[in-house]
Amino acid sequence: RLWEERDDRLAAELMPYHGLRSLDDAVRALELAMRCYEVRDTSDGRRALLLHRRAWLARDAAHDDETEWLRRARSAYVRAYEHDTSLSEEAAARLAYLVGDLAYRLDDLAGSAQWLETAVRVAPNTSSGIARTARDRLQDVRDQIKRIRMAS
View (cartoon, rainbow, N blue to C red):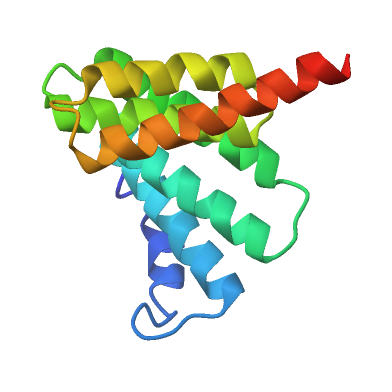
């Protein structure tokens, strides 16, 4: 597969990959990285990172497709959480937090609360940064759920 896609990669190599990039160059670089990860059949966690970064670029460009990139990133993070047996507790907590945060951004408050609770529960100790951040975000989600219920 690498040989078959050689011409596409060679054309992409004409672009400079160092220094500051324009938004279009950053998108092209991420698309190339995503294709390489796909060909190499890399982990869902690595793919999720690229998809998440792609969502940031869509937001910076004010594109309507940010939500789709966020959904794809969330799905990849969930697959990584569910299937990567080599995850440390800290890495599992980080993935659960990211899924919860993305669910919050996608207005899935129930899903967000569930994943953030998982992040707090999985975190190796209560003083870890990810556990503290997850607890803070979980409180934000609970407050928003409460406001919605009161408004109904």
